[in-house]
Length: 380
Image 1 (cartoon, rainbow, N blue to C red):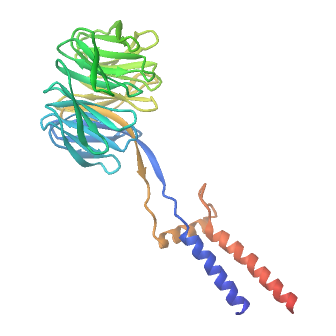
Image 2 (cartoon, rainbow, N blue to C red; image 1 turned 90 degrees about the vertical axis):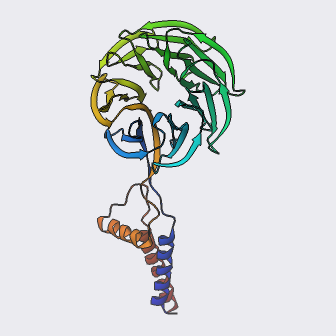
Image 3 (cartoon, rainbow, N blue to C red; image 1 turned 60 degrees about the horizontal axis):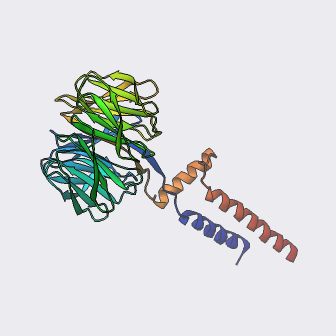
């Protein structure tokens, strides 16, 4: 075989290897807020960077409560009129399963490992325990009284459930799915949240106070007066330093310092705030503002001011925030890849972390040709 032919064979072989090398699939992690819209049977998807609604998902049964799995892959929505829970694929924003539960399901909590979903059924005073693997109810826990909201401890060992009419909080062992104790807090408890270290539970009550529970002893240790009446939703910042909650009657969000358990701020919204959630980085708080012309308010936690108001249709009720992994590009066709490689050659600016295989192939080919030419010269 002639030197030129050997060179062309070698060059083509190296180029083919470069082309068939595994192609990197880029993905991004997006933080999204999900809002239930009961009258329209929809879940609104909000991009928390732009604060724009990027998708609308149709669901059944007049959606009420909502929760996002810890890995961000699934969104669970209770349908109060249909006695169901819809499971949404967060990457595609499509309903992938519908699960029958108890009567009038409302609030939802998910175990920290994402393996179990707990649904508070207000109409049957029960908690449905769902396997996230099979999307089937694997147990039902009976609770005495009118169930309100539900939260799970950071280690997944306990559930805390508000009892609206009984003025109590029930504590459930998640291993045995049995009630450990009840804690009297008084006056129509509703929203409930737990600190990231699991040491305190905060309960929003309709008499404009917040009850504080020590989880080590399961006892009431403080009552914080907020004022205004009608406290509903409540959440904790990721660092555990602050509590944000909604005041339904005076259209405000209250802020509590968890170190002192003192009210530190009140934020006027001008709407009817119902539920509340905070981004994983703690920079923004979102409230679902209930009403025929409903909205979502966005609060900057650095300044405790409203920085955006999003139109959200009729009666937005519950809100949950999660981080979802989104594929930016699927595996490319060889032609597309070659075009991109050619563009990089022209610009001479390969992307960070990427290898320009064509350049490498050319260098190796030149070195090989030089070696072949040298051998021929020596033979001559």
